[in-house]
Image 1 (cartoon, helix red, strand yellow):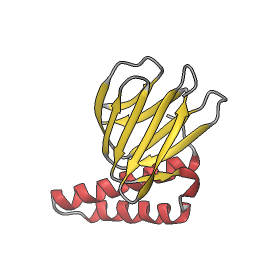
Image 2 (cartoon, one colour):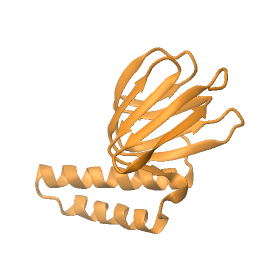
Image 3 (tube, rainbow, N blue to C red):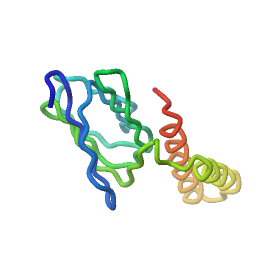
Image 4 (cartoon, rainbow, N blue to C red):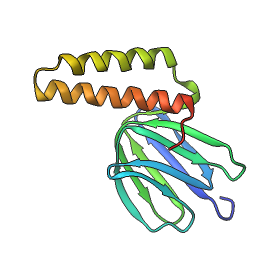
Length: 138
């Protein structure tokens, strides 16, 4: 790790671990998006479907769609255990758009709370994929 950087480690089933050095990391926490900078206090947070952004010191950023899990911040290290991890550059935009539209249709047709919740979760995942692909900042 370079001085003043954060080690970012991302883990998901069926995905090779990812390790990055970053100047700052934005994480979609359960209570809202939070930014981790060097020297950040230790914490453990649930994460929601969204985009994790690792900003390098040179101004470039890596965008990952994450879908639930946990983030631990400790000693200038962010460790993320997530159900699904997708790099924004590798996402299929057309497939994500189709999934988003399908989820919206399911929401409109949902009659029970469980159907609505499942469709809403699918919409959040599809939206996260599109935002990571588009490299959308928070």
